[in-house]
Image (tube, rainbow, N blue to C red; front, side, top):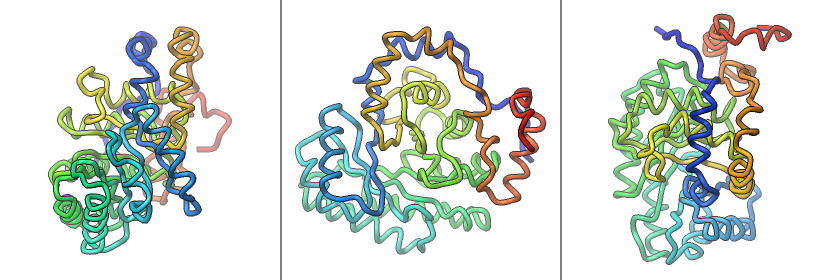
Length: 311
């Protein structure tokens, strides 16, 4: 049974100012997994994002598995981790194929880089099979965790395709299966990162596991709201507990400087609640999920902002 609660769209100004006060461009960079997952990515672009990650001190560079031969040598000797997506973006490979892909990437990276503990795998959960049989999901995650041989696994649950109860269940399974992070989106789902889903994920997995937000994150103010949702406590504001997946790290880092310079003005500017609410973005969802989200809009205390839109 779906629970009723007010969606996280109204964050107290004092809380936002408190986050901005201790957040610097250098600090926000440490949360960033710099990403390029396009079909036409060239080695020159990989070299560019590697340069960004090294220069700014980002957590990782996240690319498709085919890039391991290029990426691993570029990062040899640095603290920046390699991050590869597994079964991206649909998550529809078999358990065995997922594990094989993970095993292959880890083996090749270690051979090329000469190091272990430098690889992260962002695997995509099979959403269709999860809805049919959650025990399958635990088995597929465990298979990738085993194949990763100690390297960190982040599980993309594609939260925009799930109800809130399904998000909770998926997060519990991810934790039980031994993954290090739960992640909301591939960036190619019905929608990306919103505070409400990140809060729900953090509430479910607790403080001893990582939460990664991804999808449409392009500026520091968005990151600040996501930090409030997923890393409100100071001890969670570390790359081992909170991450941001972004293809625009330079813009996030530079706009953090603007926030530091004029925090009060940025916070007072506010945001229209519906623009940061997952219940407002239903056009690409399946009917059964869309109906639940739309009902939440009808019952929402902020529904006045949708008075000119059809429910």
